[in-house]
Length: 226
Image (cartoon, rainbow, N blue to C red; front, side, top):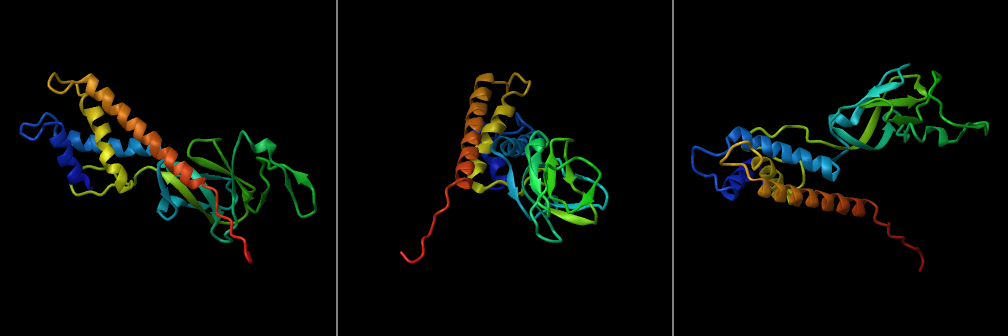
């Protein structure tokens, strides 16, 4: 299903096929765009490990790396130069981490100015930024696996959605929730708006739970020679 098909479905479902329309084309596509974005927020976002959003340049002697606000969550991080994983840690957990150096000395990562190999990326200190530990001694790129919002807005016909096909049908529910809240005597219907919203949010929660179950499914163990 693309934006043209969903547009037609909305008009049919809402009995709005004759002009002048109750909802303008601009409004319908605004509702459609909002529905895809709300699905991403509620269900966890679009898995991505290859777009430009997943490549963060690291500058020498700069401990801060900014990332695009469309990134909802960072799942994995590694250095492009070596492939070495960079541990993602919230600042709340920073003081609980102990690390040993080459000489067996155990200490925790510190938010100081010491330079060296990047081992940690601290989240939640500033919005849309990571604080690297240690401060990078050389330029590099942080490669991410993320969950994100859509890269492009839905503004008209003929556009593809970025979420999986199986979710497209349910975008209608959020579109209706918004449409039936339009401040107009011919369109306002609080009962239908609430029912549509509830159905959409319930589907988003189920989609999120299904994905979490899939991602955390126990791996099969294969025993050789038996």
